[in-house]
Image 1: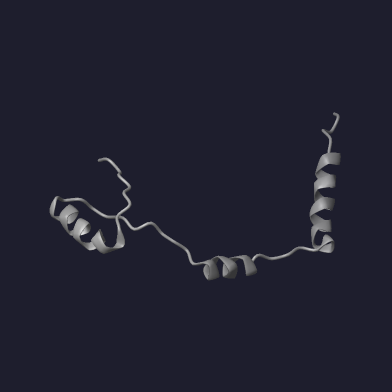
Image 2: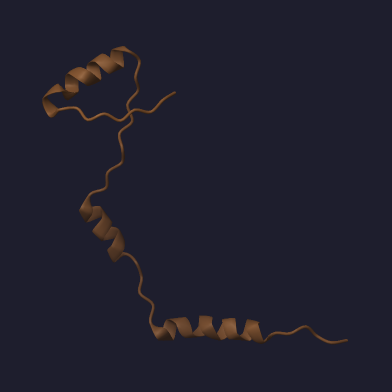
Length: 71
């Protein structure tokens, strides 16, 4: 199957779609997100302070200081 993108004038869109459907062409609508939805998603992103990150940095430093035990 081949994918084809075409630009159709607004006033001819319904006619062209009808003809293509009769020829067996399937249509897939591209998902378009509204700007308000994108802003809403961005507002849900959490912000971490330096105090929040300190335990993670401490744990990372402890792992870096680990060495193999000598027998």
